[in-house]
Structures are given as structure tokens and as C-alpha cells.
Amino acid sequence: MFRAPLRVLARPSGTVRTYVLVVLLAASGVAILELVREQTGTPGFLVGLGLALLPVVPLMAAFRWLGRAAPHPWSQLLFCFGWGACAAALIAILANSFATQWIAAATADPTDADQLGSVAIAPVVEESAKAAALLLVFVFRRRQFTGPADGFVVAGFTAVGFAFTENILYLGNAFDEDLTEGTRPLDSLTAATFFVRIVLSPFAHPLFTVLTGLGFGAAALSSRRARRACLPLLGLAAAMGLHALWNSSSEFGEHGFYVVYGCVMVPVFGALVWLAVWIRRRRLRAVAGELAVYAAAGWLGHAEVPALASMPARSLARALARRSGGRAAGRAVRRYEADAAALALLRHRARRGGPAREPDFAGRERELLRRLWLRRATAGPALARAAVMEELLPPWFDPLARAAVPARACVPSPRSRSGRAPEAAAAAAPVAAPAAAVGQGVR
Image (cartoon, rainbow, N blue to C red; front, top):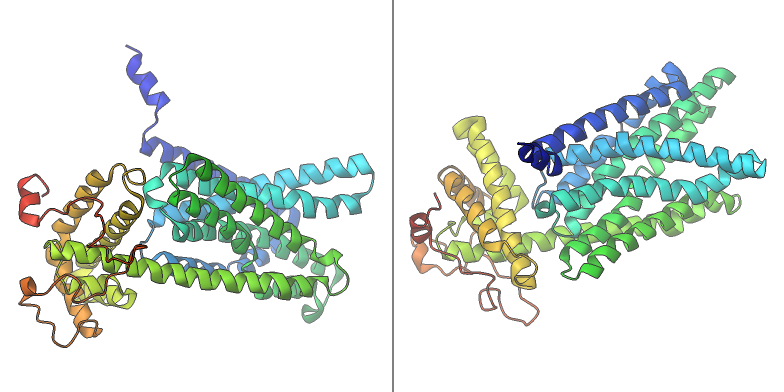
């Protein structure tokens, strides 16, 4: 009689896990906000909160833009932001305080304890706490963690949340000190802290954690167990090293901060921005090439493929659907676009990695095709019209002569490593025609 409860306790459902995570994040959020308020005072807390909010929206929009080719659910992104702002920040502030006090008691030198804690303890604690969110997504939402782009997005949202809470603390403490000393606004510690943390380096924490995210993204592409374990650790080590270098920049002389900022942080930031744009374009090319196979089988209209591979056309299609069918139609098109991108990337990974990469390819493909088929009547015309309005179709394209147009006529297919087009390479699995699939139960 006790077997059923034991099975539930041994393997909690997704709903139970969600409730547990929400409760833990809420509790840690209340705790960290109270700790910050105690350290900064209520006026400092409110000023720090207002100033720390300024870079949050632009940074979140930038990482969301990167992931829009195959968007993550907002619930997952908000979990990552909440983990960084609440759980990771709470772990960091408690662990850093304990370590600094222990070093100060052992060395009887509070100044050296602060410096050592900032350089040797804080990077390890903070990057490990943020990496825990990536690990949770990687383990429990494996289908949505498929490569470096997902590592970028998940790490970015987690780090933005962490930096938000940390900025409240630093700006609030600076404002409280200015109130005590009666400093003028332009000469205040608050203005200097705002310039360094909000203007010069709002990307610092995302820059560190993205290195961990790239490690997890590379692990998602690997079929070897040893690499899946080692690559995230290498990314985490790189994040800790860069974080430690940044924290120790003030120890390199009068101009050490500017040297590290100009010679290390800015070039690394530029390289990661270039990498992010390249990954996004590569994903869109993969979407175009793989969806052409499904268009040839009749699952998609040929005019839909270039629209699904263009972010402006996707946005236009959602707007057209909302204008003609209301919010429900806009949501249907948005889900259709997300499912189509997920289907294309699923086939791309399976075709490149084989059954070891995607052992459940057939079942996942069938599920996504069913969802596309249910929304195609709403999404198909909107996407086709968007492709026409965005001039993504060649002038000779005839939408009525669909059977006469080959799959690669509208969108050039990317080349595989062997130099052959994906259709000529070994396919991951046969793509059933819609009529046959409906007869087999895909409704």
C-alpha cells in the first residue's frame, strides 16, 4: 500500500519540482533583499534598486534577441534570472562574508582578508553559484539545451539577475556613505560606482558566466560522456579566471583597472558578441536548410521556409495574424514558429550526430509535426504573406505551382562537411508525407 507514495517521493513530477523551486527562490529572494537592506539602509536600498534596474532590460533584450531563432520559454528564462538574483546572490553573500571573516581571523589583517576574498574566494563562489542554474536546465530541460546559443541565453539571464542584486548592494552602500559624509552628487561615491558598474561594465558578470554557458553548450553537442563532464568544468574554470583577473585589476597599479578593462574585458566582450551573431546566423541557416526537407514532403508550404528563417518575417507574420485573428492567432503563429525552429534544429543535430545524439528523434519529430499540423491553417498564410512582403521569395516563384518547385528552390541549403547538401547526405530519419502521417495517428 506504500509503493505508490514511495514512487511519487522517489520521482517527483514536474509540477512538484516547479513548486519546490518557486518556494526556494521566493524564500531566498526575501532573505537576500532583507540582508541587502540591512547593509545599505532603507534609503540606500531604494536608490540602489532604482539604479540597478537600468541595465536589466537592455541586457535581457540582448540575450533574448540571441535566442529568438529557437526561443526558450519565458518561464525558464525567468527561473534563470530569479536564480541569479536570489539563490546565487544569497549563496555568494553568505559564503563570501564567512570566508572573509575566517581569513581575517586567521591572519589578523582585515585589509588583506578583503583583497584575498575578492580575488580568490568571490570568483569561485559566485561563478559556481551561477553555474548551478545552468546545470539544472542542462539536466532537467535537456531538450531545450541543445548548443552554444542556449548556453549563451541561459547563462546571460542568470548573470543579469546576479549582477542586479549585487548592484543594489554596491550602489546602496555608496549612497549610504554619501549620506553620512554629505558629499555633493557629482563628487559622490554613488556617481563613481554607477559609472563603473552600470556605464562601463554592465556586461561583466554576463561575460564571465557566458564562458560557463559555452562549456555546457559544447557538452550538449558532444556524444562522449567524458567530454560532457569536462567541457562545463573548463568553461567554469575560464569564468573563474576572468572574474579573478577583473577583481584583481585594482592591484596592478594606478592604471591597472583601465589596462585590464581595455586590453582584456573589451576584446573578450567583442569576441563573444561576434560569436553570438555568428551562432545566430548559423542557426537560421540550419532552420532554412532542414525545413526545406519538410516543405518538400508537404508538411510546410515552400513560401513558409524563408519566412521561418528570417526574424523580421517572423515578427511580421505574428503582427499580421494578430491583426486578422486577434491575440489567439498571434499566439498560434508564435508557437508554430518556435516548433518549426525546434524541429529543424532537432533534425540538424540528429543528421550530424546520428542516433547517439538524438535517440528519441522519431518520437520527438512526430510530436513537433503534430503540433505544426494543428496550427498550420492559421500560421501558414501569415508566414507566406510575410515572406512576400519582406521580398524573401524570388520574383518567378508561383505559390500555386507548389508541386513543381523543388525544395531547395526558395532557400539555399547549407552544405555538410562532406560538401553535399543535407538532402543528399544521410538523413536522420524518413520524413513522412502529411497524408500518410495522419493515417498513422498524427492528428
